[in-house]
Length: 598
Image (cartoon, rainbow, N blue to C red; front, side, top):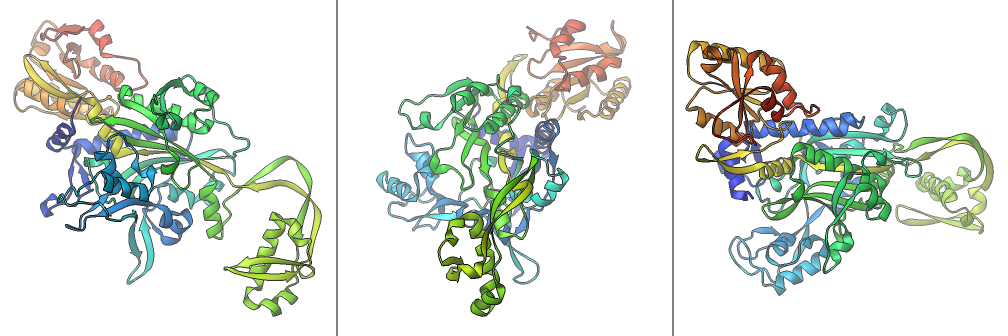
């Protein structure tokens, strides 16, 4: 199993990722993806888009990363998007209090769920010290710290705004227009891939916890009374679950089951959440996550986000620790209701009845000629509150007076002035607020997981080697082309092959520097799936116009006609094709290298 130090060293040396702005000392929590990392990240995003946008028939948008303050006031982020902070009185360093507990107190994996007071007590009980200066943190206050980056929109003081802490709000605030594009028909889904920003108290573990990161999110809008997911498509998918009862039990264990069985048993309460867990399980396996180091863990009540009625995390084991790499939340109507309340727009969908219905409806028609002189500027708001009260509680108008509250002040109105009545109305439908189911993926964390899970060491030709056993779909480079030596005939054929492979859409690198063994090792370390070597035997030998194709994981080689190379490699690298390197071994001549093909 790879250690974090191995991944960090390899990533920096081979250009996967490294700390940003290092020439100026750097800033914690910001990383640059190098040439290999950017390609790997881009391929992960493309694979996610293929599954969650294209194959599920959803639409994709791209919203701004800076949004006005009103958005986050409505969403609840201004009040409830906090982490636990404890500050050292000696050196002034700030730390994530819950992380200190998790790192230093045995048996506690999720200290965030315990609350501020309990975390403070545990710091004192276990006499925890400041990681920076070793001063005691016992007795220091544990406080909430809001994670959003604040900014100003426009010159001067401008309009207050924030860099988005999640991509989701960019979808929610545009719902009235997105609803039109969907022709008002539920269910429909909208995806977005892009950066988000969180002012982390103590960024750590490379790209696992950073201040700028990429999310890939799907917001699925549904009618909670009628819409059901196509559960049959994933009901047989096997999953490892870690639900709340097992986490709270002294002898809690994982539940090995299928999606269908988990829904039937009530382990996963929402069929929609279960459906997306099944989709995600298959997608993670497709891109190369080690499924023996993967689980779905249900959020404990104390750690559940303010908007979620239920939430499950996809977690991967990294260097002996479990990290969240995706979250699956049933957000209910929280987001759309909040934005509808705070804005002047309707965040609902009109649901048409099969047949028109005659219903009794409580209505008021306030006498404004009486309300105006009596209540002045508050009259219009009082009238609106009377209308809302009639819909909510018609019995309130049975008395001689009725009371409503406007801006914290209570007003009493005579029922006669309110003009309350119950009328029969014919309605063709009703406005409903859709519920939201959200799969949210951390792209950077997925990239890191793939690097660590793919990291392998073995011995080839008597030498130790390190290689990344990445799925071909996400590997930064598909093919490397090598002329064995710098001879015109070999260089010419190598150039022709390079041009043809690139023209077919493959990511191909070219290397003529150093021994062939060193060139193989360089490509192994970045996860290049196949290496093509042009040698004299392929031009002058018994099999002319052939090249050798080397497979990364086994280091086995076969000799393939140059004219068939493009077709064969394209088939090997397309995830939907069933062609494998074993098929090439059966079809072509195996090159004797001392490496077993068994």
